[in-house]
Image (cartoon, rainbow, N blue to C red):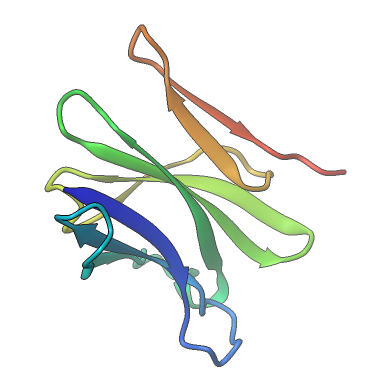
Length: 121
């Protein structure tokens, strides 16, 4: 099973439009089915665009994904979400930093997670 993380939107350009959809593919991407969406339920959801997913599969089968959250060109930060049911549902884990651009998450050999992200002044 391959999971594809895709930024999608309703196309109206309103804030909060882009979100990350998770598609499952049993045949390496030839056929895809929409599995879920990483759409937080926090009060700011309708104002925040979320995109640039960086997922990591952990040894215990938990999937974590860092998303870039952005209100405008000067206000962006990374958040971490997790799924414990193979990507069917997602929950907020933590805000990685108060500032920063797209994030890449990497699992180190000792099991820790390393998150790198852009920070522009």
